[in-house]
Length: 64
Image 1 (cartoon, rainbow, N blue to C red):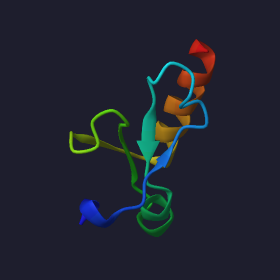
Image 2 (tube, rainbow, N blue to C red; image 1 turned 45 degrees about the horizontal axis):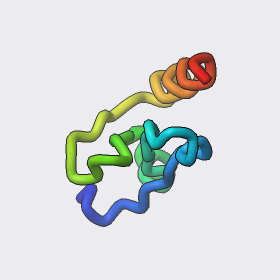
Image 3 (cartoon, rainbow, N blue to C red; image 1 turned 45 degrees about the vertical axis):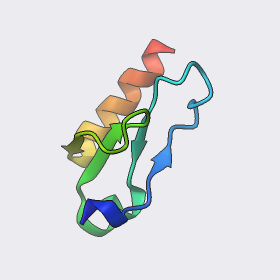
Image 4 (cartoon, rainbow, N blue to C red; image 1 turned 60 degrees about the vertical axis):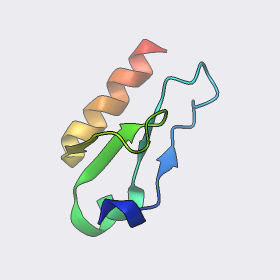
């Protein structure tokens, strides 16, 4: 199922290459926020709740 997902990169993806991708359409349809390492698209994915994803985004912002 996740092979057909459309993934979006972080808006900061050109800043050093250390970024994640997420599947916004999957999140909208299911409430499950899938994220993966943009350098390893065939690697593992992390499934987060809306709150978990929001916390991840806030953490990433605080590191930049």
